[in-house]
Length: 149
Image 1: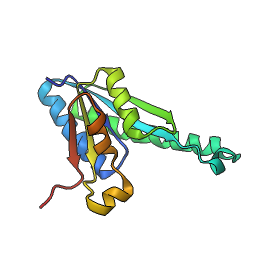
Image 2: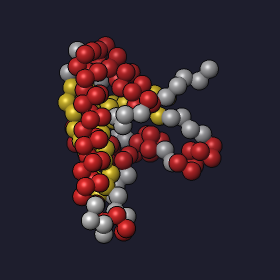
Image 3: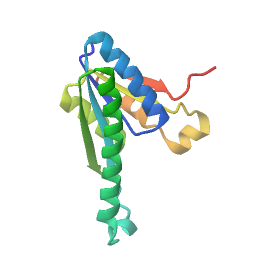
Image 4: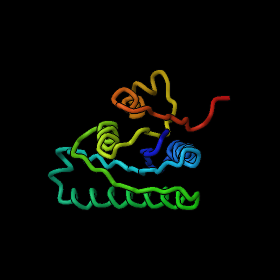
């Protein structure tokens, strides 16, 4: 069953719920987790020309490393084997980077949290989770931020 589970983490409460479910699944299947945080470097003409671009980018990467470390501490406490990886891409969509990493790592499941937005909010904000589902060659476990009542 699921031996290599890629878990996308971004520090949100939805992401934390996705991580919790992935941990439970790994415990049952004897699987290993690959914790992934995506940094998609956006090339805004104003920011790219700025003297602060490198500093902003480094701050974003450092924030991503902290998110990974917090997730790793939770997984370690649960006693589940894991690896962690900061994935960066130049102007690429996070969903594309997550799916590419799943393929490269041999993941047989992707787990991620979703805010569960619907209607105009989903249209306005987009949905990385939905795009992962559409692009993924392996099953995707979506975990809602809060269960519906």
